[in-house]
Length: 299
Image 1: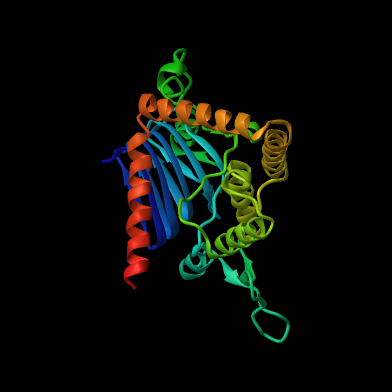
Image 2: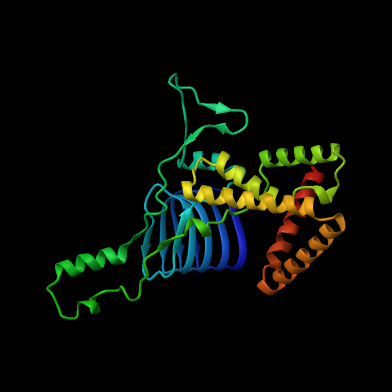
């Protein structure tokens, strides 16, 4: 029963239930059994689960990996489904722990491994785009088993139910988990070291474009879930656009103009945080990062 929050449960679960939540973004690690989403509205949920059940939900978007078609029961409106859209450090281990992935072995029964990605994984095909509405199936069975009436429409729930839709590739969004993977951290530190050797200051370092590119690289290279071709293409196009814009800012604007642009963007972003109600999420992330840094220093 949460509202207006971002939550990240990055671990394996036997079963998981998201109940009576609204206006939240939730990432549930890997679920060995059933992920049940019930009585929720205006939600974005990302998870890998063996089975997904959606009950009485409104305006819920699910970015999922599941080897079984998702099942919708009760009255659900404006539910959307999309392929899994994130990566976090430990996802591969969670998938192995829950049986949603298996290590690839060679002909001589040796696990295929590399020093960067760990063991190669294989997963079942993702049934994210095959949701099944139980009520409509029941309506069809009842209609075929009963004698014909002139008012057949009164026997159907079609007016109270809406067929779930698929998130189009043009609207697909990657999700940034605010916990940096070890590989991304190494790449970032290498870039910072390179900039330091080249004598560049903080203002010359890659910003949003690089962050998006790192996230996209994690999803494409480290996640065992392949994005559908059109979704991957759209994500790559967005990354190219961000890089192009970043290069234009760095090459076509003077240092003073870059600083002024950054100030205006920061001001607009702060205003948006306040008006959208997302300021608390940012403060929570800052607190989490400070707590994490303090814990590392203590150790």
